[in-house]
Length: 89
Image 1 (cartoon, one colour):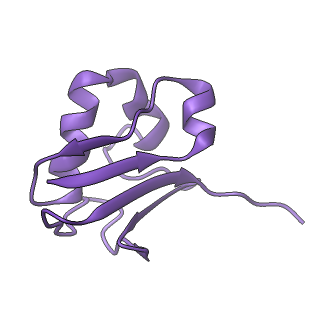
Image 2 (cartoon, rainbow, N blue to C red):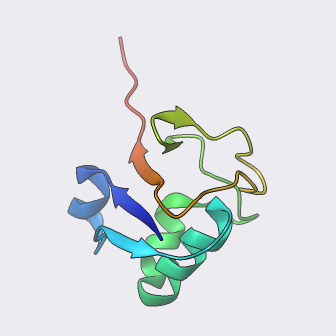
């Protein structure tokens, strides 16, 4: 099962625990987390279910390719990290 971790910015806003979850895609894995913590979903995904522009999702250190449908595959030993992007100048 994959390990999902959320950045500190999410943890300041809502409950965003690290979890070990099943699922074969990023969408399936996040869906399992959102079942237990539904308030977290609106911080990560927009109204159409795509990753919000200010949020980054990485699998094993690489950014996901499918930010709209979250179809990137994940394996049992993968690490998924979700965090808010920083901007400024």
